[in-house]
Structure formats: C-alpha cells, structure tokens
Amino acid sequence: MTYVVTENCIKCKYMDCVEVCPVDCFYVGENMLVIHPDECIDCGVCEPECPAEAILPDSDDKATSWVEINRNFAQSWPNITRKGEAPDDADEWKDKPGKKELLSPNPGKP
Image 1 (cartoon, helix red, strand yellow):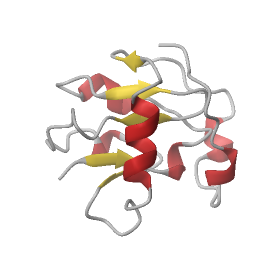
Image 2 (spheres, helix red, strand yellow):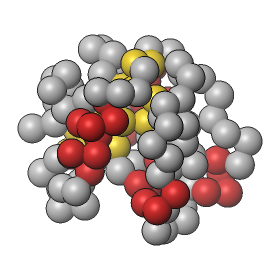
Image 3 (cartoon, one colour):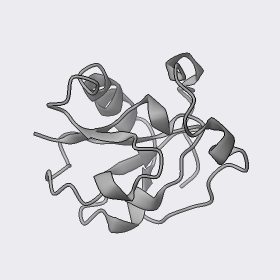
C-alpha cells in the first residue's frame, strides 16, 4: 500500500505534508504535489497534515485513479523536501470539487 495525492491538492498545494515525510517522496508540480508510490513507505504521517484532505491511501476508492497520475508526474517533476509557500488563493480553492481538469502537467519549483 502507498499514499497518493488527489485532486483536493490542485490549486491549494499547502505543502504541510512535505515537512513530515521521512523519505522525501513528494514531487512538485505547478499547481499540486504528488507522492512517488514506489518511494512511499506507507507510514501515513502526511495524511493528517494535509489541510485540504488531499492525501489518501491507495486502497481508498477515491484514490484509485490517482495512483498512476502520482507515479507519472513523480517521474518528471522535481523532488521537494521543504515546505514552500502555498498559493495566495489556496484557501479559496480548498474545498472546491471537480478540480481535476485544472491539473497542470508543468513541473513546479522546489
């Protein structure tokens, strides 16, 4: 089992999760983070740290389609090991549904 980042992270990207990850398995995109599923050790410390509740175990039905998205982007986006600044409008996007279409494939800045 692994944890994955889901669409709740899109346009929020709070990054509280990055600080607690003991294996640095987060990767940063332009408007969301992903977890490399082959690097995640399933410790679960990141899940409660996410204010947007975007991190779920891959066994959760809501996470199923996000496993491959996380895997694919983790291979091309830069690794992030420190919490950065969330977007200025993150709180406005936090609880909005249907953000998957807004996912940018562009890498972010660590």
